[in-house]
Length: 200
Image (tube, rainbow, N blue to C red; front, side, top):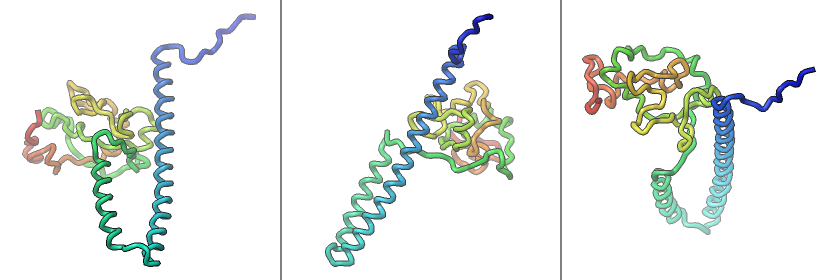
């Protein structure tokens, strides 16, 4: 009879890091889903407040014009606050299956990379839950669920030397459907192959 080694989980530091990362991402996703539920609860509360306001107006207790003026001022103030730097919002792309998308733009990206420098890879966007479940495309912990970007502004999956996509087969729906041909941020003239100003 031989003693078999006990199973203590991952056998390498790399595997342990992957497990820890996966657990962290699951925990963060759970927290974000709770946040979404809180938002739904807030919608229900808003409905009750609106019902109360309507009842007060109908009974003559509340002047609707004065209330509307005040509501507009408060709404503008809150809208400005929501756009302040550091205010986090949870966003997710609604695409259910990126692999089922059809009629995708046909652009000779590889041949154009030396000109455009893959500037489209500096544009921010939200990932889908399909992307999150696959666990390949990285998202920003500070801005869930936006694509993670390096300090230079490029997507972390964009190779700094070649500008090639490191997750091309698993790329998000936004990347698959994006059409740069009429985007002035990318091209001054797509047909003449003239990139936008500032493309280094």
